[in-house]
Amino acid sequence: MTEHITPAEPARTGEAPQRSLLDRVEPWLLDRKKATYGVAVLRIGFGLILGVSLLADFRHRHLAWGAGRDWAQPRVDTDSWWPIFDHLFGAGMPAWQFNVQYLALTALSILMVLGWRSRVVIPMVLVGYIGLTRANPFISDGGLHLFRIALVYLCLIDTSKRWSLDAWYRARRPAPARRSLVPAWLENLLHNTGVVLLAFQVCLVYVASAMFKIQGNLWQEGTAVYYVLQLDEFATWPQITGLLDTRGLFIGVMTYLTVFVQLFFPFLLLQRTTRIVGLIVVTAMHLGIGLFMGLLHFSLTMIAIDAIFIRDVSYQAAFMRVQPLLDRARSALRLPARQPDRTSTPAPHEPRDEPKVPDEAQPS
Amino acid sequence: MSLPKHDAPPRRPSVVVRLVVVVVLLLAGVHMFATFARVAPPNPISTAFREPTSHHIHPLFNQSWSIFAPNPQLVDLRIWVRASYLDDTGQQAATEWFDISSTFYAQVTNRVVPPRHWRMVAPLYRYQFRARDALTESQQLLLASDYVGDSGRGQLRADLIAADNRPSTVDHYLRSEAMVVEFATNVVYAVHPDIEPQAIQVRTSSQGVVPWSRRDDPDATRPDEHFRELGWRQPIVASDASREAFASVFRRYLDD
Image 1: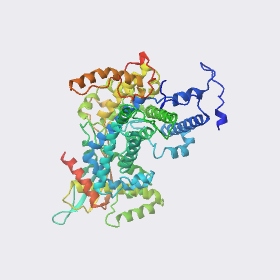
Image 2: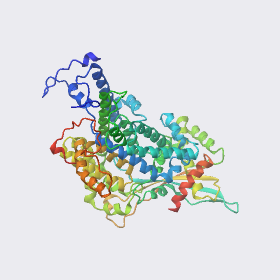
Image 3: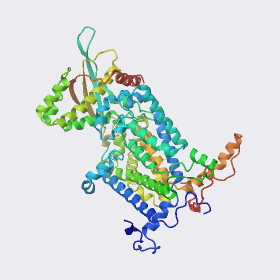
Image 4: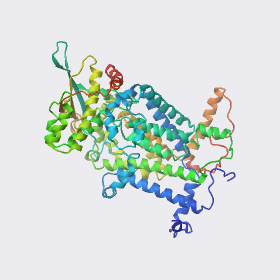
């Protein structure tokens, strides 16, 4: 197979006549890990989403996933899932064991927030999450599927390069001749492929949703949001949404904005200005859906994944602005002063070759 | 680039590196194609690749993004239950109908962090609805009849098969009905801890909303609720532990 690839294929027209497409793609994939701050925000966000929802569901747990859900077992048995996961939180499990496993998953989600041994913790969270959600297939929505799929991609990604205990430990013990089974270029390749897959997944959610919506006459007529807010199932703040749903203009704008921002999301990402606008609009949309239609898990999951579309330089610039405030707060609390290393957590031994583009320095 | 220990790649990619890059890109590309083909609205491309893409997506990457689309759901779906029991005088009596769905919806009203399972009843409704829909008309008529006692379920199966001999469709329906009945039995024990149900009856309902054109009309009311009743059935209890676990949580919803 190599013969076909190694001799550079005839160059495309354009600025680099000597280089094949692969020659140009390879450095992007191999040289450096992309979106390192974005995936750190994603890891922290996912840990919080899972941890907070498990704690919020604590008093419901026996009905939702424990012995009180045994009525759903026939569906567990007939759905086509790998059986190994069906036994993790299987029917007939003693209550103490269920509680221990439930709390262990909660603890793992906290470790995920902290970024402790993320390479091991994230696959464990994935397995535990599938196990728990398999226990009751009737608790299922887009947010649950998305969370699981994103966790699969996160297994490829180095999520604890920034803002994590892993990074902090690495900085304390500088480079003990890091011996990895996986060479650096391969690690970078998997990381960047994972980031691409996450970006693809988010675009897929938006574009597929929009493709379904534009077939419907209520979305075309601009009234769909009104109908959603009429249902007991989704009107979770009826007093507030009751005020909104008679305002025709509001409903029309929301309905069209939802369809168009979803359909055009991938294109909004291409340019910095439209990217900022697009991310602000989808974040507002998710907060609205999350708070007023009861779909909080899905919404926060989307917001957390959207964090990868903010570039590393933007996070760095934002952090540099926040840092003086943190330092002042720290000195006010009389905590020991920080090392004067200007930036925050990046490990000192790594090359700081990220381009500092002045006009990109605004936080998105 | 002073100390490129970790991040630096080999400057000239070797044949092995390039081969790995190509394989990873191919895998990612195939994965993305298969996912898109499965998740987009039905189209000729996804039809052409139905078998392999379905195999690839299930179960790990399974997903659906047609919520609120093509049009949002226009009705509220509810599951109700009542029970028959022997009262103090030994007479047959029946409880009032109890609305299970609204009890779950109340759990999320005016709450910022909704419990994860509050929409559990609607998927159960749809699961049973689809399984019922796969039956023939004459089979569906049978479902309104009573099948109680220990032989009830066996008799229902025999009658359904006699009406149309497709055992896998019938068994799929019976499985869905058994889940609804067991779920509803749990509710009965939680709501009426003091009675011993002899039989239970489940009905499902759907109710439309005030149409957009009448949204400003203060006299507008929601259309009538449509009910679909199953006949009386034998209660199903998986185990006392399961029943208790369900009731311990569900009773709190009644107090809220």
